[in-house]
Length: 321
Image (cartoon, rainbow, N blue to C red):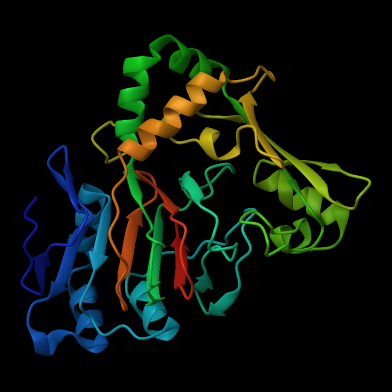
């Protein structure tokens, strides 16, 4: 597919990589300096929606840079220009609603690294698209690194072929323990009342069941959520038949408030988890945020995380089906 478009100029950014012939992230900039305003950007996106979606699927990540995107309202207008269906976030991360489709990203301490993951991978339905907007770039660190998911599968199959196929056949089980109320001192600090949008336990159980979670109420008032069975890898339409590393074993395995095991309860070997973590890091791609950046991710194809950062850092997020 031809990448060039009459309304955008293909640019470059620090940290960009070419993986299997695809540039990640693909950088799109204003064609001319006088076309950097938000109105011109929205017009260009609406006139090239199909082309943009094809480019996103092909390259897995697209970075709009050099446009005058100022705030959550501008970011929301960009998302709504595509007409994609909105999706409600369900998960353990504390987020605050900002404007229409726009929320804060993880509000956990900037001093904590957020492990690479596909958004909402633990529940039944994950969003296809995740978008970030940088309103305030951090003075140091705070990148949102990306990993082509199929590369992790390829390398894990090279080193652990039998284990990968065994774990795939058996499936995975995740558990996460949550308090009743939010705890912003943790990167997974969302309480179950906020996560499920109710303080009624019966209604919470119904809503949890709808997204594939079982609840176990704890004497402390918190809850232990269990999600099983879950896939180790997945293949999605339109993505060259690539087998994506569609799990969060590294992020949840052996943590204080979470676990990742095989669906039958068998422990996953530490050597498998640690090597997977190393491979993911080796395959990572990152760039420095600039004010006004808008990053589109194909959530079916790339994992993302968050590097530790000095404040201030303000990155907003929206997710779509």
